[in-house]
Length: 214
Image (tube, rainbow, N blue to C red; front, side, top):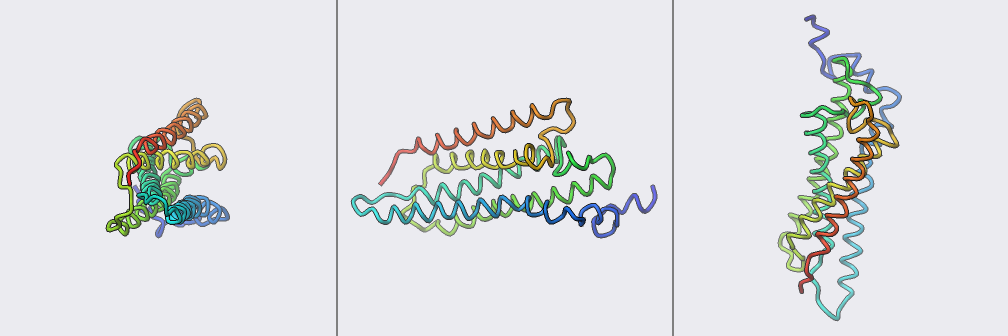
């Protein structure tokens, strides 16, 4: 084994650097950050609008559900990403971030995919951290509906939302399939999307089962 084979880190291998920092870097990076750019503002906007509407209701005091839903969704989305990254990327190795465009059949290609896997994991970590911090900051509030059903339903729905968004990598960006090493990867992609939608519906249904408390 020669030195060039051993030195496969991004900072010490020119071929890996050229495979990452090329004309496609900005496009892939922005698409990987899309969950952060879209989800956090939307969920926080939902939280703010629901709190504002509840505060305007003076007839009957209500425990607020929107903050708990928003924070549990963020945590569920992040944890869903961790399950995808740990189980499908690393343990089962069904795919990597760019494995449909750059097959990881060489050590250098594997390292380039591993770099983008790391960016993907960083995004899911930030989403999870954002949900945990926001929930921690609200721990002393007495106006929240801290129902187990809302929290568990939010986690499941959030996981499903992540899988729906990940389906963009399967159908739109074509970065990878659920399984790249099977004769019919499209069937796996469709099954994955159906499962994701079912998870969102199940999670939402669990949240709706919660009895309103005052």
